[in-house]
Length: 272
Image (cartoon, rainbow, N blue to C red):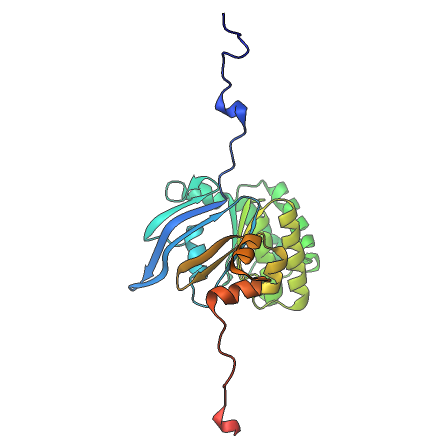
């Protein structure tokens, strides 16, 4: 008679826990505008819990890619999965599970900072008390408590950027997209945002960020991707990419992939 302890194989789930799906998995994305391919066959995979720096020169297709990954633009072709959900099949489920801050902010300026965050929380399904509690906590984190009752119309660019990031975090998403979060931000606001990103990284939140501030990206990013003219040129763990391409810093990596701009021989004729 066979030994009952060895004759029954354990179910697959008992052998090992299933691996978490990538936070972002996109395959062969294409987006055209009037015949121009802003994104051309782009594929990308971002592990959960990573800090992914999505880099490229101006006009490379970074913002268009984020708009597709967050459901603002529909891809002309290709597939997108966010946190294991297919974006085409479950767009509302995807949008409920992510936070997004676009480069061009669209805020309700006739609301106060506190009112706006509570409104965003309610839109994500939080109860009133919970939305208010989280709103106050986030205002404190981004150092806007003293401006909580001021209209957003009276906020500076840095303050608007911080309240937009707070709004994207109100429902505690597992994945947040940030498109140029340091654009137009002063030194003090930049420092606050940087510390908040460090805290999000510590908690395991997946961060997908575009930025031209490579020094900040290098200190925070675990993974990186470089897009040029709508095509992904390199993507993966930052250390592995630097080793593979012989780069010592993220800036070196960027210049190796994109190319170093010509910085000599520039003359202004009217200066003599």
